[in-house]
Length: 267
Image 1 (cartoon, rainbow, N blue to C red):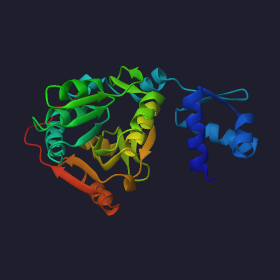
Image 2 (image 1 turned 180 degrees about the vertical axis):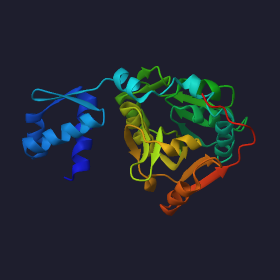
Image 3 (image 1 turned 180 degrees about the horizontal axis):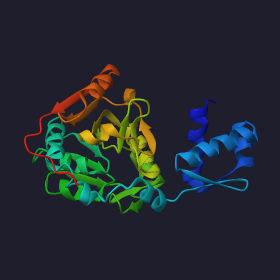
Image 4 (image 1 turned 135 degrees about the vertical axis):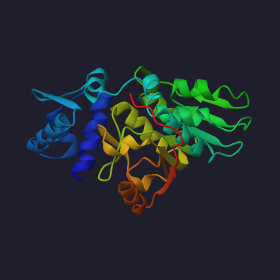
């Protein structure tokens, strides 16, 4: 097992059990104590785990929310609002009548939902309460809200229950937001639990679309949720760094760049 796979297993155990023991990991992964301690040290540097005697504990959601300084979703809707609305309109144009669409939580995805074609008899599946509310304005839409633990910062539902439910769906499109984009790490999230939901959504769709304003190309989140070869389309605006967009295209991703007609708002 390579290093990245081993650390992914440790992360999953931390999320599930809230803590891990070095001795258990040595037996499970068939590596030395020294190797496991190096893994836990690295996860500590990433802000995921806090080492203790004999193992490590998961850094709880409230702690790494404070660390990442991500504002609540209602405030993020106001940030770069014209840009996000333009991205949302372009993304919504991909969707055809009667299709099944999955949305994860995020302010840009809310703008996709806001711009969906009316009376299109869509089936909407989401873990985002505000996205479900916005999409419910179309009375022809069938809306399914995934279950789980409420994450107040994004008003989204996360956890194993939502991930299990996603296995029942096969969507035409999956729309994902992202906290940051790294040419090395791919698309990232500031939240471990939301990253797990995003991974499950990627597995439940035929076409995977990431939507993001220009600022997301200048930073990376806490953990990666998918690589460039796992998505089909990336939609951003003309304000994004063109050199980075060219590199993303080289990785086989269709990049859609939309104009922004009005001055953007920054909070």
